[in-house]
Length: 354
Ligand code: ADP
Ligand code: MG
Image (cartoon, rainbow, N blue to C red; front, side):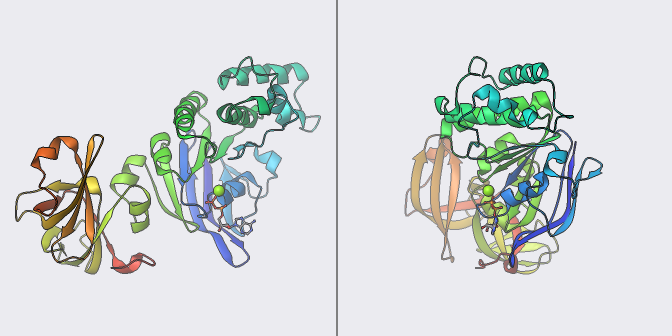
């Protein structure tokens, strides 16, 4: 079942935690909701789940207007960052909980509940651990129990709020892959909240990028990275250099180099955004003239810092280590060509500018 969010706003006092949010989550897709801490991710999930009421806007679950449905009637599975397992219940009883608290006429008979628990234990690969208590499990295992518990009610959609946020890096990566496989098997419409751009780009079919209660872009991971729709997305999804520039007549003048404007409409003072790996070494006069200020090898990558001629700021360049021989030393001139870049008006970047 798909989720449709239309013009949803939510204020806490005078503060807008969600500001006119529009989002379609397609049936069966895994969508990552990505944004910095405080951007409204949890609030949006809570609105979908019915744990929070929006001040304005509409919410649809499939073809049903969900705004007026109770939390239970929405049949939404929810997993929180901090394992909200019941400490005094075994793994099996934790998983069965959502079924057992249903009103009697909706509740499944006990043998069916137990069969469902066994099925879910197998799905989350925790067979044999059903009699354990949460304290006897690792963090990763607890989150898999939380997921099984969310699935026990046969939810129509699954909402995951930074479910791996408290786990260490390796466990996180394993669980990420595991969750993707699980999603591909169940096909359940899923919204996965994270502030970790790598996690979002690796896991999701599409990413929605949230900033200060507003959605800045909804795109495939590749498009969010290659074609950021705003200065914020450029900086939040990956690393970026910003170079002051002027646009006129379909051309961009940046640090003494004329480049075609990616957006023909731009004019006046702008900023050119270019990722470190989109700067390449060029022949003299075909790129920015610059001076190398630092050079560092990091595994398979070379990181270079360079000061553009006539500019105060430095740019970062990332090159494959195989180009080490072509690199000048610190203090020597280098020419850098931006093979891919975006431009935005200076005023569009709150608190930024040149
Ligand atoms: P995120 O999950 O992206 O970190 P949240 O949705 O939790 O962000 O919060 C968004 C903003 O709304 C934050 O500034 C937070 O302080 C504020 N906020 C969230 N819940 C409440 C609440 N119950 N009362 C007041 N402010 C809240
Ligand atoms: Mg949150």
